[in-house]
Length: 114
Image (cartoon, one colour):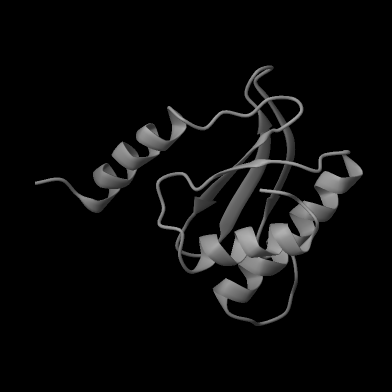
């Protein structure tokens, strides 16, 4: 029997075989821990991280989902400064639900095209 972590890693491998980032359309990779959400915009062709961010930068007490949405907005602003307007979303094996979905919505509200 496989653990939930092993199942997520299998989904991650399956998604990564289909999703890849280029210089014109980089990949947004999301990692979700129990406390924070980490994200980075990656150019897979040159193996470089262009922009990165994590939750917890603001001192306000809000829910994890709201912080994920704010983080998406902040990452979108950083991406706009780096002249990135279109990205490919890599949910990293997580379900498109809750914090991951709120993060993606924050990216869209911030002006990035997924």
